[in-house]
Image (cartoon, rainbow, N blue to C red; front, side, top):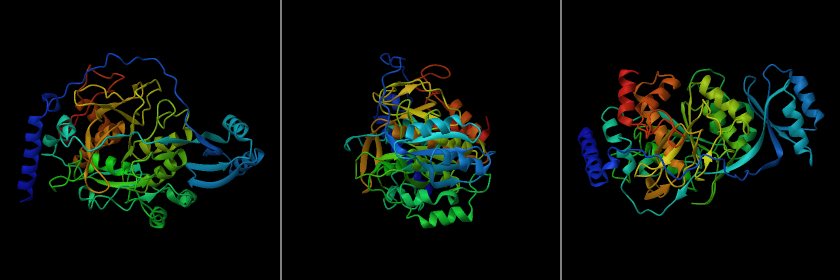
Length: 448
């Protein structure tokens, strides 16, 4: 009976695709002609002007590190991580922020990364619900992929929480963790797993999760929209389906705001969230926040965060997907090997009018007119790279669900080889292109 219902659902999707423009079934990417490759003027983000995020060198003597901090009158107000990957939250003496930052940055003997606590907004351009056709599912070739894999791999969604009570996400959202509170950040070292393999959990991590109120509610909406784009259930008579409809979400709240308002996060919340990812069992992370040049993808601006990102990628075999941003700007930030940045296209195969592009882009995916599930269970149509990013993360979940033993580099290689693109290889608009879910699942099944 279940298979029959699935067949009916898939047939419905295919019938829907036949009524849409032909490009939705076999989309062709087109390079824009009005997007220059010059660096625009970018407004720097704000930051907390009395806090520095400090990563001591693992080999540095602990007493010498403390003396170096005392020398600049810095006070450690919280500690995250363990000896291998430790972050100190340092409160600076009033009026001495710049001098403290400069002095600690120059002290390479004791500190490997110093960063400010920058603040960024979610990458979303919401619309009213007008266009109920989920064109992105056929564009990504999902109905054919679902014949072989519907997902199952867990995705950690770092956002405003996820509304677990809606039908499309029912039974798919774990309790999660709220990293957006002072109490969560003060938990510090117990957020770091002691193991070295993906998915390892420990007693400390479990205690931290239990102490948190969780993140399976969402008053803002952004996290729910992101989660449903990736994993919304299929064949349940509710709204639409996600790219990986059998996958689950570990929600971590890094931002909050009233419904539809601008959800803001900062480096410290993201760092706290990433430490919790180590104990969550998720190998896939989606982060739909940032901006051009100064965004979380820039290791020069967010050096402490990148210590954590690289640890998750290289030591834990994790995969991180970031949205490219909605400023319609060229971003010449060098490409980061342990982050996958995703631009957005519209239903014509053109770079979305809001999408950033440039050297930092790895993939593209639909990001305009995307039907998602709202916090009240109704449909909502949204625009933004906030949604192209979890769509690609969803394809990664399909791959890992089919072959859980694949290393992260193999998953990325499959994504690349499955892509359709406007030109052979890589380009600054679409990266390696738009992954084809069916081809990706086939490669995960048969091998590269």
